[in-house]
Length: 98
Image 1 (cartoon, rainbow, N blue to C red):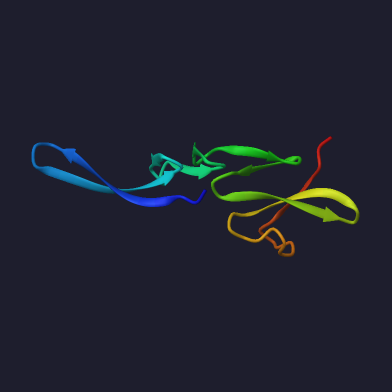
Image 2: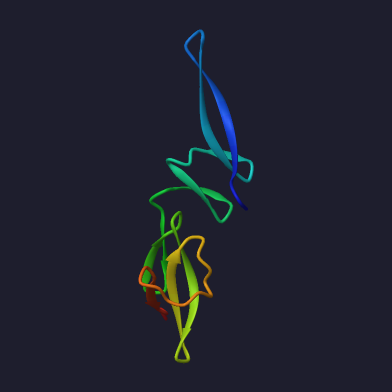
């Protein structure tokens, strides 16, 4: 699910109102400076997950299946890049575990 932008208005004191951007993940609001939406859940920006024998940051990177010389492998790419693109200097090639 793609995050949606919202502006929340919070009362601060008797007369001051503060507007700050928040996004939604499903039906939950979150602060994009502290969290992201990953697999329909709000997670901290520092959350990591395994990708083969590598670890990737779920808010900033993605784990892609990659076939290399008839070996099943994985590749960590920047989030938003197509997994079908050729290996670039920013990508990390990871071995399959198991």
